[in-house]
Image (cartoon, rainbow, N blue to C red):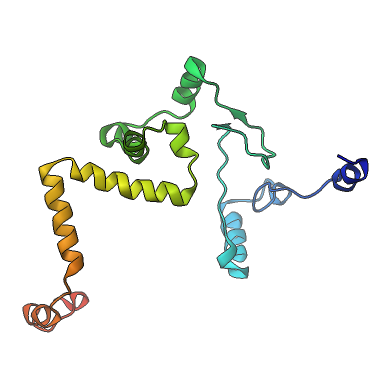
Length: 175
């Protein structure tokens, strides 16, 4: 790489920190000030709003991250860090919501959890759909549900019958 290119880009530049930036915070800055700052930002260009959540232990470091971050080590140490700082809550254990979709995709594709998490989002969505269908195809009840879903997609609502059944009332007009 040429030195002139390095010199050109080796300059301080703004980077993402937080919104509002840290220099806006002071002892008198409270929850209401924060909400006001967010609202003012949303009123400027709400279609450009984004969210960034920083977790200090990442699966891998992002090339743009300026935060104090460390990749979670493999093995027992990584497991201990996750158990200490990201404990699974009882409701997550009971309903397997934390990793249910990832687990289903992993079982469907043979990919490990990390490989599933690294999939491009569009491919992740496709595999989510395909693995969901495959999970229902594996049982008699599931196949019945899929058949009913397909049948419902093929039919149109009989709006006259619905109108007659509801006595002409719309759902939001119910007494």
